[in-house]
Image (cartoon, rainbow, N blue to C red; front, side, top):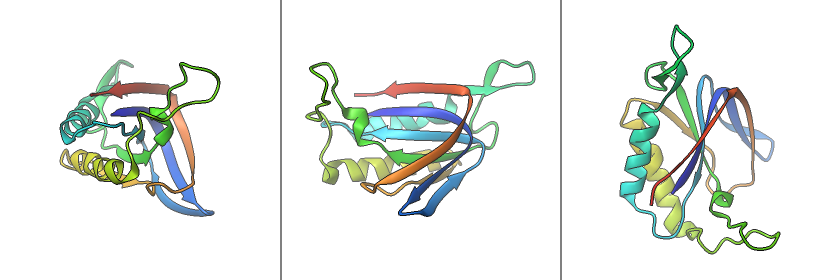
Length: 146
């Protein structure tokens, strides 16, 4: 399981011209599910995400978590994070989980984040989404768990 965390001042998802989810200060998390990923990986990444200290404190140091700042989270499924670009110029997706395996894990990851008292909003799984964000910093981190 791979997640790309972007610290944002705001982010939103639109589908077919309609806004389906939006957050203020917090994270936009692009979520890629691969074959063999487990609920334990989702739990680990949710805990890591809730406690990751990438917001600045009063001294300008990255010392505060999204929980500490009362931030929101927008979780978006991102099939292409499982893409393999090591051969040729066209990505391969052999490692990506099938939708029937990925959807429950994507939903579970969002539920795990909520157990930390976070406000979590989601994009629409398998939809053609347009994602808008203001990356604060910019600050972006990739986390993985197998």
